[in-house]
Length: 389
Image 1 (cartoon, rainbow, N blue to C red):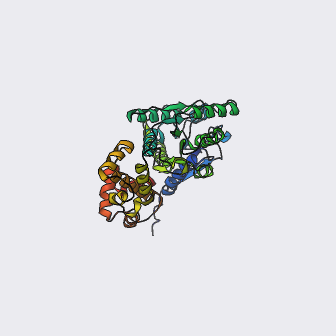
Image 2: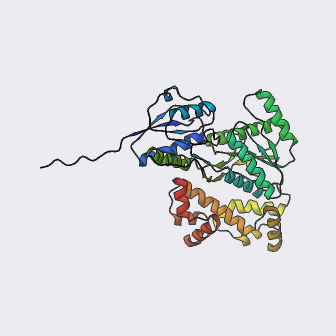
Image 3: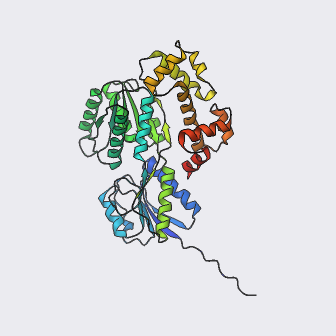
């Protein structure tokens, strides 16, 4: 009996991961890479525990691997990756190696979510607190300021933090800036560490959070956000998908495919609202009362008639005041909060759609699906697949 032909096995690919393990963003990227590797098991990794901007590992010099996934945020990392002369994908906005494809969170959409979140809370004064070391902070400042200008608002900025100067002097400058802002003010911090610093400075300055200063971070590092005082609201990046997409690009490159040196920008998932922005900066008591009721009961199947039962104005007057202060009607606010909860459940659970509909106040799955597609441009199934891919 002739021997059966041996099945040709794919050679295992060795991939270097120059991604920090010291923060939630980097760990989220690594989870996405792991997901891709589980679907393509002929991968092995070289990884060392490191912080943002750490020196390249000594073993990379002369390493005979197949590809590199890197957060290229320093000239040293850029030089090490370039010397390796291997297929590589950049997961940083710094763009120190212009010839590489790069995958990053969409900073324009982060800014849009942040502006919407703060406008919903009735703020008329806005500020951005950045970190001058990082290109993504500069972009977030630019997009945040632009989105506010389009909405008819100005933005005060403080982006002098470098981490290299006198920490006490920088802290004093931050406190002085916060005191100088018109109140109440909504502040976007470029990332959660900066948001935590802003909260600490508010405490030292005697500024009430969120009543005088509401603070929103980026990255949703749950440990940092929950340890902050008060707990920090934060934009949720889709780090899992970002890491997955970067791994997929590198796989194509290691297979000999030409991949253009262009951006692949991944939209954020939404906002994790916590106590640092849990406020309504509105003088209209009836609108505040209506909003508090809507926030508490939006997913219980309420409609505008239920809202009218807790305020002392007519439907027409309430509609006018909502439009003026919040830029949407009471009905639109109810729907907005329901859909936000739907997005969270689609992203974080495996609940079937009919149970999600029941728990978010939709009488029928069909109505949920139609409303979801109309407002977000995706079906619930497409949204779930994109959030988890």
